[in-house]
Image (cartoon, rainbow, N blue to C red; front, side, top):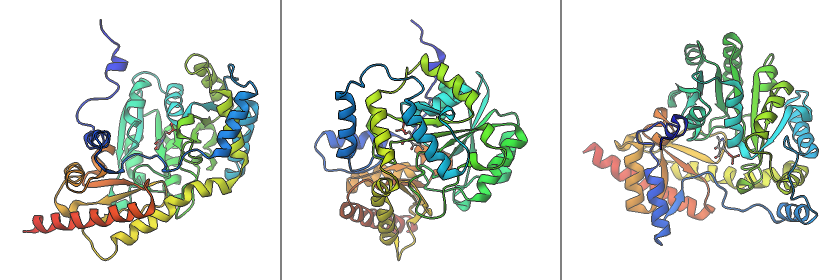
Length: 394
Ligand code: PLP
């Protein structure tokens, strides 16, 4: 029996650079003590009081079908949070609650792209982007950035790619690079969208993790609210990755269409999970800062570990839970470096190549282990790189 092209071609094909990740996972399963600095998951779990709220809601009977667009309370809470942070008038009718940011990325592209439309995204990129766009029927097209511009897309590159495209997906704070887009970058993005009549999908799941600069939501720029769909999530901000709860914020008529899609796909998000998210957001910004604090601290530890040498250079990470390291001085590709580091030092990092061609010769380090183990791993990574650089220079 033949499967659809939609599903068989979702992953594109070719090496996706995730071999090191799976190898490390297998080693851990075999009992090998690997330090895993690979995926973006906190080393803490969802807090007990959020779980207590979830439990109380479930025990009180919120276990039936929940409202498909989301509960009124949570939609209002998300709308108020966005309005307070961006000064863009936002009501519950601008919000659809989704099972996490990933589902929101898919749904937004389903909403704006016809089959065969060109959907732009920025390289380096979060690993699922091209396949999510393909899954929605679009043709993904990368706008390649450069370490020389700290991985911020340039106005010229945006303008060149935009002709004939339907949508542009951006992510700031960025996974994998940690870049937080400047006002100049966001203005260039907005100007490009307006000039070329593009939809903008703004993935803001790391908006609570900004170490330098300021998070700018492009929906707040002039003329952008009517063409921007913001993707948000409780995963990173509240360590609720497993709860699968996020949202889309956009124009009311688009949200109304997205509700039609939700009725026919997810049929909403568990009511007790939504109540837990409502409780969590109601705890205010201190909770978000507490969840973000270890990454802020470890970013400083990472920069200290790299001090006094120039074989491994950090791309200036201004946000998110990762540091991107330039290891080109070792003469190795990101993939070869990550593979050799895993074998020699039992440290697992992600090859830059897993996130697109712009990040070749880099590795991404997730700051997701305890401070001491993190500092130790980075010290060993630097020494390993220095030894390789010496061999390369001989
Ligand atoms: N967007 C980015 C950039 C991410 O890094 C992730 C997860 O790692 C997601 C979206 C999806 O997050 P979730 O589906 O858990 O909300």
